[in-house]
Image 1 (cartoon, rainbow, N blue to C red):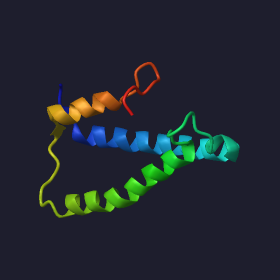
Image 2: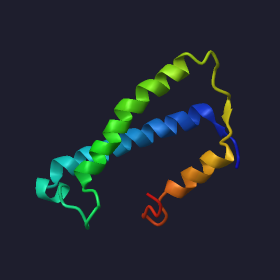
Image 3: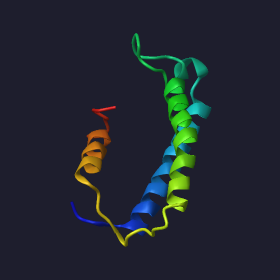
Length: 103
């Protein structure tokens, strides 16, 4: 895998996060509550449960990540080189033809 410029990667990740937040806001503002609470089978989460789960992890992990970055005493490298395991999991979660195969 080719190295990625760290500053560009961080900018792209921030832009993607803002876009996704905007999409979630649009969904929750424009869909009826009954649709947000509907799941597609026994044991499956509905939209609101998924969003709650993501927000719970965000609230838990973001402060820890920020603290580790602030206290690391290092600076980012010019180029980001993903490890094989991180690259593998990233590929697993990326949509293919608009569908996420491994959730």
